[in-house]
Image 1: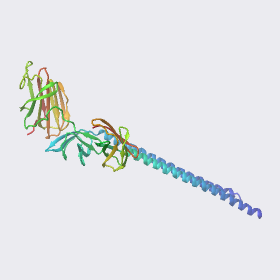
Image 2 (image 1 turned 90 degrees about the horizontal axis):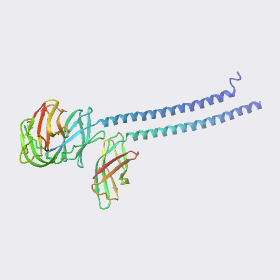
Image 3 (image 1 turned 30 degrees about the vertical axis):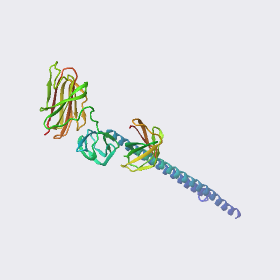
Image 4 (image 1 turned 120 degrees about the vertical axis):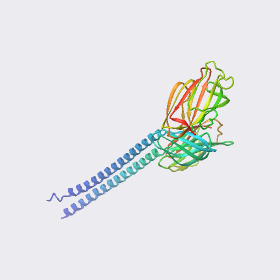
Length: 274
Length: 142
């Protein structure tokens, strides 16, 4: 009984209380530190996800001159929706929010003046520039229901030097085969000849196929979706994802230096746009 | 009886000493842990803001003056936090700039001037640095 009320008991209680208080404090501090670390790790995870989404963004941008104003044809070949926040033409800009759904082609009419060097900025900070036009070749003039063909004398392979004339083709399938010895295939003594044929087509399906068989070299460009086959020789085909009933501008370039001149080019699931 | 009183006094003195030491240790520990916690929280916030800060130069205009060059950069903040642009480096030379704050989703012109005339059609290495130490670097040809 005397031991129960001894002085030692009181100091033990006080000591224990102090120890417990410091212990609880340290545990609280450890919890706060851990929580901070968890927050930091969570933010890093979010940022990594953002970086992955950002790196997946891809747009093919083409500029169209609409009565002096800039219209953009933007193709989103990815499986994610992309939001545009800014459109730049030279050093002028237009702010807004344009949604480009996955696997789709969208036309955006801007209030900016048309220039060849324009770009778009996405909400995730990516910048996509307009594909520059081919230099040295006049932009194809589009005629309804036919190919508009501009003929050139070549100063070198694929180098369209001097415009020598024009013609029209009324069949969507291009096919010619000149005799091996021929030196004046079109107009004048131009063995080294090339052409730039342009037309507007309407897609009859969500896929268009273009196949070719060429003597020297040809190149196919589909303006609205930013497709450029680059120079091709021999035979080949391409499969293009398009929007059914939408119209597209197709340009075919042909370069014949001294070899046998022939080209067969067929477009499947398409017709002349009227 | 006298012995009893001195014993009580001794106990009281002992209690006072133990309590004082306890309070001192407790106060020190409280201060230490709260200081450490707030420092770690601040550091964590800073780190999080640093990784959340994202900006890009979307356009550049170069004005060549008689004895200096002014570079105007359109900086777009595509992150979730505001950014404060602090400095600009042109070909490694620090330009004279004014601090510029850009809110999330906005863009602003951030201008810098150096007392060197950069000739036309040259490659320019341009770097814009934020207050948190992040930077965006680009090479332009104008």
